[in-house]
Length: 143
Image: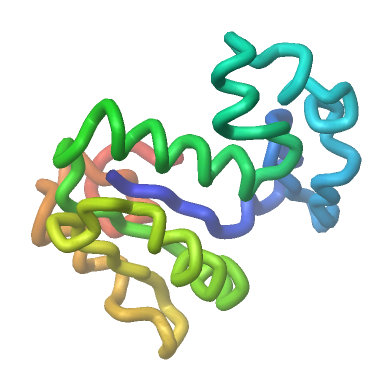
């Protein structure tokens, strides 16, 4: 699984969790969170009682990890985070404790900064060049 969480460049994102065009993303302005969709749109009362109000990115991430652990254990063995900042890296270190079977999943932070574990070229050890976007060091299509 590859997740590029770097800047979106010269276009503004159009979905929850995106910024772009030098705009700061303010989670408090997310229309889904403001509309209390985590309460009103919960599939069942039991899910709301288990996960609470999904009114932030971290609340959604925590619920997703719990669901992944319960219903799809052992389905991912490698996760690559590309171009993250140190804040995300630190938050990940906290939230990764929710992953029950963490010993079987390898997490790598890839990118150009010296604090990251490896360069983006590490992806070529797992994926063939034609399957990777050009921005990730492959010969596949551009993002």
